[in-house]
Length: 104
Image 1: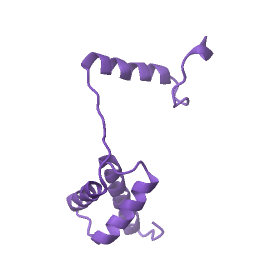
Image 2: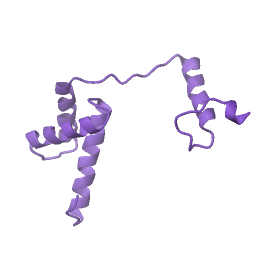
Image 3: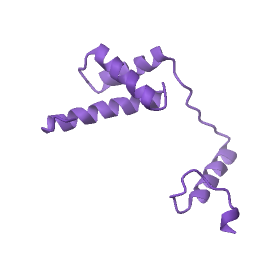
C-alpha cells in the first residue's frame, strides 16, 4: 500500500521516492560520496572575499564580512555553498538597485 512506503522529506514531489532510489542507485553503482565539510570562519571569509573579487564587487571588506557573517548564521553555517549563495544575493541586490529599485 502507498501508506506503507517510507516518506521522503519532500512530499510535494510526485515521484519523490523514485528520485531517492535513483540517487541511491547512483551512489551504489559508482561508489561516490560527496560531502561538503563546514569551513572555519576565516576560510569562509576568504571564500567570500575571493568570490567578491571574482565578480568584481567593490564592497568594503568589513561591510562584506559583517553581512556574510549574518548570512551564514541565518543559513547553513560556514561553507563554500553558503559563501556562493551570499555573493549571488549581493550581486542580485546590486542588479535590482541598478535598475532603480532602492529597496533592495
